[in-house]
Length: 278
Length: 275
Image 1 (tube, each protein chain N blue to C red):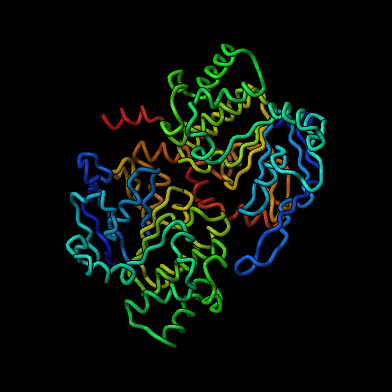
Image 2: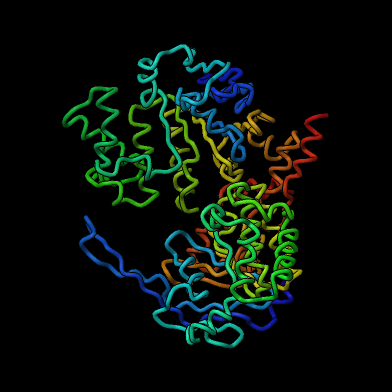
């Protein structure tokens, strides 16, 4: 088990108002072949953390401090051209909305092939064979390479996105709420597929979600974020069954369970603020 | 609430059918027929919650819209307190609408951005000519306070509120008319889980206080388990299975329902976590 990614003290703020810390001193590690879930409510900074790994923060935002050490190399010291060699080749990424992430006027085969041509220089028959192989790996018949995104269902589109992201066999995969827009049965299939691919290719997966149910299914380690800070992190069993921080406990208490046994309890933010101040 | 399921049905739908025609094929040159509702019959008992669950395209939102007569049916009847809504003349239907209200999914799209919250919530009272201006203002204020907002909020515009607060405004708008039936179409899907819990509890409290009957449309089986007394499972426009929520979650009889329940993320792990 080797350390793949180490985030050290990441701090992000709007360029215009650097005192508002959207991500505040965030540190965690990710090992090869393991999944780390970042879980939190909207505005907790979980997506900004993921985007910071890729160096994809919008121009209005600024990384004030922090290192992103990927396979021993600090990504924050690289220029754009060097980053381009890492994005898509050594780190793959999947987003929430499969429809807006795919180009509607290009076949899915072409879109999967793009990164293979750019990063690996594949062409002609070799490229075609590789595309077909990738589609089969994600559970789509190879013949669908000539289909356009609108001819596929939501789940199939997300499978195409996954095929694109693993095309160059990256060491790490970042998945930002990849199943949020999907039906529950399709979500279960996609989670299973991602988990299998992670094991088979020994990838490290950084998985962003707001759903503790998804965390329970897919995570090895969990990082809980609240207002830009990590409030708790650790192995999934510990965080789910023995949460230490009052926010984690409160957040878990308002997740409805499938058995309907647990009374719902909304978060008492006033109480939480007092706890934080204490 | 299970005792109430013995109560009489307040809203009954019988043999609803609805077909959409859809463009299909490349560039949309073809046409195909989609059965959104295929012989659907449901009944809602007074004071209880009937959840309609299904995946996208199952017809659950079409069912909601057809129950409210927001969309014409191909065939079938919707009986509200014994009267067939589909057969009523427009003016009488409008009067009945006061008793059947709706809470929408998207709290950002369902409130008019140019109206003040007080006017949004009071509009129904104005349309149905309930009370004079002073009484109406009083009712609006009372309702807003009940859902957790303040008098000062009446003068604000929707954009000044968070998603959870907007959903409270949407609930106040529906309930200020003192309806008997409220159709909630995915009312908590767009909300964070902590806000979701607040809104679900609020809906439950209001149901008790105002003796409301809910039709609750949702794709989230965990939420449904908490809010519903009875469940209807829909798939491709048809009802696959229906019954008491306890029974269906404990022992689903249909393969489709079983598959749906098994897909709930973290089902086993989270069940243990809550003990």
